[in-house]
Every structure is written in C-alpha cells, then in structure tokens.
Length: 222
Length: 221
Image (cartoon, rainbow over all chains, first blue to last red; front, side, top):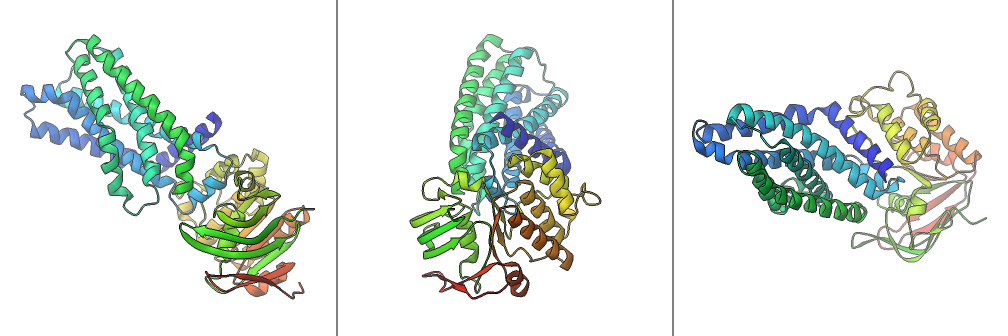
C-alpha cells in the first residue's frame, strides 16, 4: 500500500508542480481572503485579534476546498478512472497517496497563511508545539476527509457545488477544534488546547481509516 | 487450453440499464478477433466487459480463466484496454505518464523504456507535456502505457482512430508481434479493410441494445 501511496502522491504533486494551480490560484485566493477579513474587521481593534484563530482556519478550509476539488479532478480526466481500476494499484494506497499530496499542499498554504496572520493581524505565536500539533492533525483530518468526499462526488455533474455543501458541515468539528486549540496557543492557556488537538487526531484517524476502506468501492461506483 | 474469452448468454448492465443481453463469444488464445458492427451494436461494451469494467449479471463470463462474475481483479491486471479515452494526465510529460502507469501496472524500468522506444516517443517528444500533443501522439502515448504492462489480452477499441498511416502500421505490427509472443487481441474498428487484414477472425455484432447476436463471418486474412 505504501509503495502505491508514494507513487500516487508523487504523481499528484508533480501534476501540481507542473500546473501551478496551488501557487498561482489557491495561495493568492487564501491571502486575499485574509486581507479582506482584515479590511472588514478593524485591524487596530481587539475584534480582529480575538477572531484571528477562527479566521485563519476558515481561510484554510476555503483554500482546502479548492485543493481538494483540484485533486479529485486529476483522476476524472479522460479515462483515468478506468485506468486506475485496471491497474494493480491498491485503492487504499491511492487514497493515502492523494490525501498525502493534498496534505502537503495544505501544509505549505498553512505556513504561508501563518506568516499572513503574523504580518496582517499581528498574531504572536507562542506555544509552537501546540500550534504545530494542531496544524498537523487538522491538516491530516481535512486532507483525508476531503479526499474521501472528493471521490464520493466524483463523476457527478454537480460535483463542484456538491463538494462544499457536503464537506463543510462534516469539517465543522475540525474548524471548531482547531480554532479552540489556536486560541489556547495564541494567548490563552496552552494546556487547554491539547484536548482539542486530541479530538483533531481522533477525527484524522477516523477519516483516514474510513477513506482507506471505502475508496475502492467509491472508485468502482463512480 | 481454455479460451481467452468465453461468454455464454452473458447479460451486462450499464448502471441499471441492460448493455448486453445474452451474448455468446469465444476467443481462442493467440488469435486476433475483430468485432464488427454498426454504431451502438455493443462493440465497446463487449470490450469493457472483457476488461472487467462492466459487470456481468447473468450467464457465463470467463476471461483468461477467471470468472468475471466472481472477481474481476485478477482479470483486470492481465488485460490492456486501449479505448477512446487515453487515461493520460495533461500536465505531465509523455515520460511521466508512461512511467506512472507502467509502475502502476508493476512494470520494470526496462519495460517502460522499451515501451517508449517501441512507439517512437523516447526522444523528441519524451519530455513534452501531453497537453501539447496531437490526438495521434496522445494515442501513441496510450499505446506505450499499454505496452509497458505487457498484457495477455489486448482490448483495442477503435485503435486506428486518430493515427496517421505510419502509426497504424506500427500498431498493427505491435499487435501481431504480441500475438506471436502468446498474447490475444480483441478489437473493434471501423477501418474495416485494415482491421480485417490484421484479424484472424471476424465476428459480427448486430441487434442493438436489446439482443445482440454474435456470429462469425467467413474471413480470409
């Protein structure tokens, strides 16, 4: 499975490197959302400071929708799905590989957005361990859930609109938990953030396992 | 020796709709069989059934000795389908595509390099993104992907479409060479003169969706 995951992740990242969709479209979109939030909420007032964790994760989720839709689209091109079904690739490996590629893109985006909130919102990162743990678990949770739902809507004519409608409610616990953990890390009590980080880890494990088990069936059904 | 393809009263569904209604077909190992018939006769569906991509819900269906109604996975790994869709990633180069699919089929680096070489894509076009290729060059790239996996059963759906004269000759030569090495070829084509010259046997499909019949046509290659 890991060999197949590595093959698929390498392919998706190579497609991304060649097409530059994340760099040229998703990253500017994410930064634009951060800037618009800063305009909408007075950058010198306390509201923006209090809202920084939530705004950061909402921006990550919106950007993730684009990255996930793009990842799903790669396998919808011109007979690729049939070729995948005919290949000797383990469906669980395909799922893990696609989720890893999305996670790598999200990690890069989160780093960029992290710089954005430090510069634009004046955020002061303190508990780096908690911030890193939250980013890691939330990224895996979003990537695995997104890859699973991307496969679920694949092949449908309304997939572009259906994906956010299905995915955002499912990711609401991730948004809440990651925001609470960031609040604790950015000025609160870091110890209060770790239970939220644990919840994110449980969510990530649940959807990673579910995706690995269900991906083959979804590949056949789409 | 068991036939490469054995269908008896096979009924296949596309979604909830019947795509093939009770067809019989036998393909011996090591022969080239041409499926002939008008548009909508079910040629593509027969090929996709043989690849294990369209489920058979009734009747007998074995391919390369495996029962398609029980488990299609062993069949899928041993067949190669060259269809209307190319299965290529536009943003990747020719070499990237053939390498990815070659590895996905468990092919070695030598097989992948040989496949690129055989279809004439190992030099000038090797590092060109597929998005910049012509339809014929894309078809050649798909053919390289098929060659890399060394299938036992070649399923060719309109293989000559979009190819120039040289590429058609190349494809026919590779198919004949594969058969000489023990593979079996089932194909559909509207290039009848060329395809009939290549085929060992011609099978006619007619009747449309509700009840295809397959019968052999006297043929001298």
